[in-house]
Amino acid sequence: MKNLPLIFSAIIIGLICYQSIFIAPLINELLSSNDASIILRSLWPKFFLMIFIISLITFLTIVIFNKQKNIAKYLSLVSGLLMFSCYFLVPIINNAKDIANENLWLILHLITIIITFITLIINIALIKFWK
Image (tube, rainbow, N blue to C red; front, side):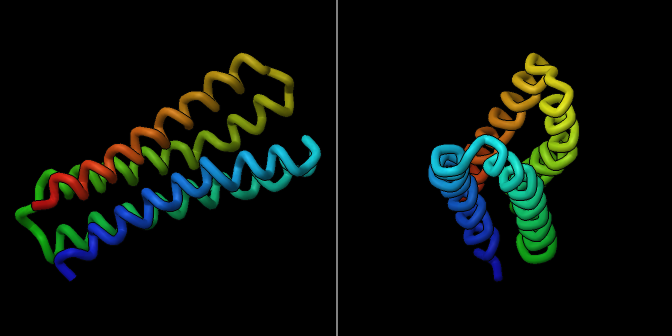
């Protein structure tokens, strides 16, 4: 149980890499713009919510079984909060696309990419600094 947060962080790392490197690009490559949009609008909120939940479970596991791991505790909390913020940005991003506000869409989309990358780095750091 004490090393469970390491497994959870590894799962988050795997999810982010798999979704970003394989799933999203393949959907955009193989499907029409309309079909890709339908799938991605369903997929991304679930992706962000799943990582939020795993981060929350990681945080609670650390609080219960590894109270002395303060850095890991804060990293998992930040990971969850970042993904929670992305989850709430999705409808705003979708609306920006729907009303053809390309500048807003581009900015918000870039923000979610940066936040997701930061979440990836946070979970790598959690594993690296576990000791």
